[in-house]
Amino acid sequence: MLIVNTLPQVVKIKKIIQENEQVKTFVLDISLGAQPGQFVNVWIPRLDEKPFSVAMDNGLELHLAIADVGPFSHALHELKEGDQVGVRGPFGTEFTCEKGQRLLFLGGGYGAAPLYYFAHKASAMGCTVEFVVGARRKDLLLYTERAEQLKNVNVHVATNDGSAGFEGFNTVLMEKVVADAEAEGRPVDCIYTCGPEIMMLKAMQLAEAKNMQAQISVERYMKCGFGVCGNCCVDGLGVPSCVSGPVMPLEQVKQLKDFGKYHRDHLGKKQYFG
Ligand SMILES: Cc1cc2nc3c(=O)[nH]c(=O)nc-3n(C[C@H](O)[C@H](O)[C@H](O)COP(=O)(O)OP(=O)(O)OC[C@H]3O[C@@H](n4cnc5c(N)ncnc54)[C@H](O)[C@@H]3O)c2cc1C
Ligand code: FES
Image 1 (cartoon, rainbow, N blue to C red):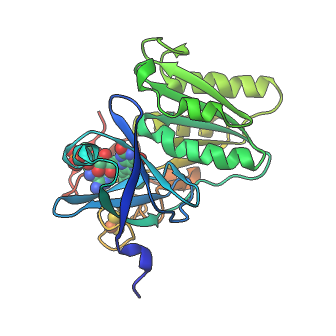
Image 2 (image 1 turned 180 degrees about the vertical axis):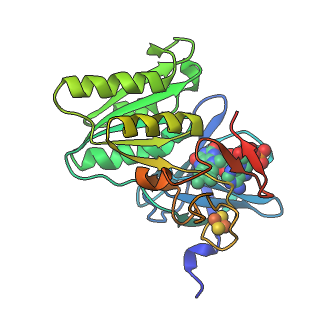
């Protein structure tokens, strides 16, 4: 059976927002009903197609926060408002929570953008969100000003050089925020994380140590996006992370042999995390 979202739709870029020196938000003139944590594949004909997390789908527009890191993302950054791209999706699993919970988000790099979208949803569900974000420097922080506008969302910033907020790694700040919530008598119910895998490993270890729940965005090299090519399968479970993930619960991530150790490149070759 051919599923409609497996075919690309041609979409106009309505607006481009330069977020910092590496990241632009592309506002696409389409809504796909995408939920926080899910991703879409963006296609530039005759070049390539790559996956990107949804930073907002408000029923009218789809937002993607894209870092310029290589040939494809650079080609995207060269596009102008009014240009067109192909989009397929949404694919994968989403972040979930229950009404009124206290949640901790740990975001790094472009991972802050999909977490912002989830903060938007969680805030509307009456949750309290402790949103911990980190960057090397103040000017590389992503989506913090947007998150600060949300009701019951407390943004905690960490920068490596101390140019904003806590000086040091956001994982250290995360531990402090979790301890403060415990001391207040209203502990965090669940940790959500998206960003560099070594950062997410720390979130996973804290959740295990505290016997807390966690949801982790496991990103592997993706091609088809809907479970056919097998390129994104995770070792230990053997399931495609584009279908069983990217968002996986802690219990599932604990069964992965590759998490925090290595991922596989476009040829399936192991690439160990630095
Ligand atoms: C589920 C998911 C969500 C993502 N969300 C975002 C996002 O919101 N914003 C963002 O900037 N980036 C996101 N990425 C990463 C993005 O797909 C890659 O950075 C991008 O494809 C780089 O391509 P390139 O040609 O510019 O660089 P390249 O030089 O080709 O690659 C740079 C690095 O990007 C990664 N990468 C490249 N191709 C893929 C691929 N097909 N699948 C997964 N990783 C790849 C590899 O780690 C590679 O080392 C996401 C990846 C996944 C799997
Ligand atoms: S990207 Fe093809 S199976 Fe996941």
